[in-house]
Figure 1: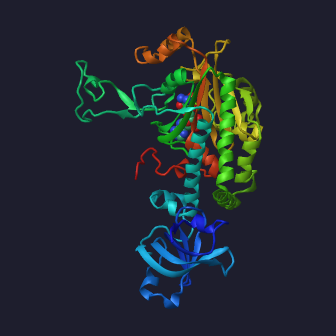
Figure 2: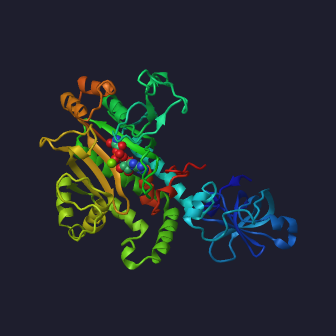
Figure 3: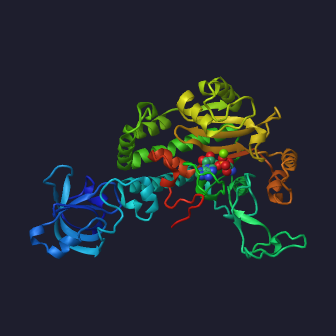
Length: 477
Ligand code: 4AD
Ligand code: MG
């Protein structure tokens, strides 16, 4: 008799037999029915205890949260709600759980409460479903790139560069915080620091990924990314995971095609492989939205939303067209936006992005050809001299999901751009080398993994789709 998972016992092709199973008690009802879960599926298996022939002391220890090992017969269920159940022959308590103290009671908890108990929140149906989906999406991403001829590359986590130039980096140092070594000019002397220079946690693996694209052809990184932006929103983390493919000889159109095909493929993967979790989350979202006024409810349920993205083309719209649409929009005319769009060149805020995808186009939108001065230094300048080959992919309910571009491959143009932005050539000599030796058109993008998980699970706070969120003033666990 081998150990089985709950998922195996509930699968269609299981034969009725003697089984052994270990898991955690979700509920224990009428001194008789244990709902047991082991994380392998959203569903619990019902274990029926013969209470008349079970030690009273043991029955008392079958409490919510306890770890148990059960041996019994898998039989067709007498009751409704499940096809099979286990008639318990013997039960061993592996780990007690004091019902007075165990935080996860069999009732509805708020997500705030569960965030404070993030070490136990995957004992709930919602969070176990979210994290199984997260794992599945991660697998689907590696599968997609592997099957499409990409190499996985590990870009450094500690770096000397701020790829995005936003200055929102976490410093990495071993200098004494109270008494750092100082130079003669009384500045912090980074020569004395561990790496002999100023270093920080990476904000993007892109620049290093470009070096590998220019030799291996098609590469991607999927790693942790750190940003010290002090934005306490439901869409920002200080530590998040980013997927960054980079491809030689590919232009911006190819980049858009790749991003769209990739996102459809990984979302389709979970539609096919995580059906039960999605159905659970679909229902959860519908229940939650019932509390909202009609106007605030989503027009589609979760599964239909994912299917819609998989089955329909993303709209491709230039920044200039988007500005026109926004300028003529009702909320702009009636001054309902916090930032009123007045002229070409304005940076888009999330309220504008959401208007475009949720109200105007009602589908994912790829915005491209942004003004050069609101985008990073490495993006390829267009012939008009004022826009760059940038693209952002905006999703309903999420806003910006992807940011990418065709890269500036012309040495002189890149040097000029860096000069204008005060980026020292010495710092990025290796990046410039790529433009000196065998330069070519190349492109890539970055997908925020947690934003993808939000979309696929219908969760509305990014803190609820990563195991242990890091946000301003919060690094518990
Ligand atoms: O648009 P971003 O800043 O682009 C880059 O970093 C490029 N170097 C990517 C590339 O071309 N290889 O970030 C990419 C994506 C965003 O679209 C968003 O989904 C996510 O990363 N992101 C965040 N996710 C969670 N918390 C944050 N603080 C995020 N900042 C960006
Ligand atoms: Mg961006």
